[in-house]
Amino acid sequence: MKLLENKVALVTGASRGIGEAIAIRFAEHGANVAFTYLSSDERAKALEEKLAAYGVKAKAYKSDAGNYAAAEQLTNDVLADFGAVDICVNNAGISRDNLLLRLTEEQWDDVMQANLKSVYNLTKQVIKPMMKARAGSIINLSSVVGVEGNAGQSSYAASKAGIIGFTKSIAQELGSRNIRCNCIAPGFIETDMTHYLKDGGAEKWFQKIPLGRFGKPEEVADVALFLASGMSSYVSGQVIHTCGAMTT
Image (cartoon, rainbow, N blue to C red; front, side, top):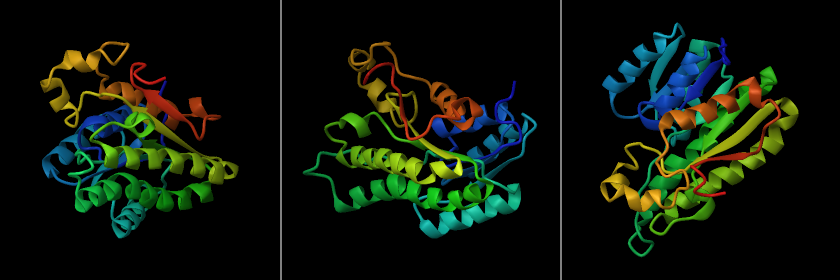
């Protein structure tokens, strides 16, 4: 059974890690997938081909979600190419970890633009066609760090906490138009962003996780699939922790 047959999904930051896993899972379930990337044309092309192999339409867009004009152009391009945006996954993000005493204004601003402003930028654009269709699912990637904080990650934590507040507000604003907005808060997931943690001694981190391991991007993708599909038709304004019970 394909849960997203003929739906159009827009996924930001999908050339690797969690974003890539979400794009693949959506394609497996019949969604046509538009996705963004910033750096590697080669990786984007490879993902395009991988998604198309599932018999769906797939297209990569080199676009900076943190730039408002670029987000507006991206949405217009996707609508022209695909005809709709049924699902939007705001996944693009960065980290610039540092103790506050050493954290520069530039590092702070970079994180806020890439992680939080990008969610505002894309959501503001995609709700227009969603409101017209009176349907839509917006999925924002936050983090357990946005719930609990973490020393040395004040900028990252603040941006991810902001996403949670934004999500809850948008869910309340747009519920009457049958548009749902939810958050996924991953814990430690095996991606490029967490590779250095495992290099530093995985056992130390596993002790904080009751399931005793890092999660896989595909496990986050399964949660995104649930939130994108009709299985979650009465779920909105929620934060789903995907962290192996690290936070409860």
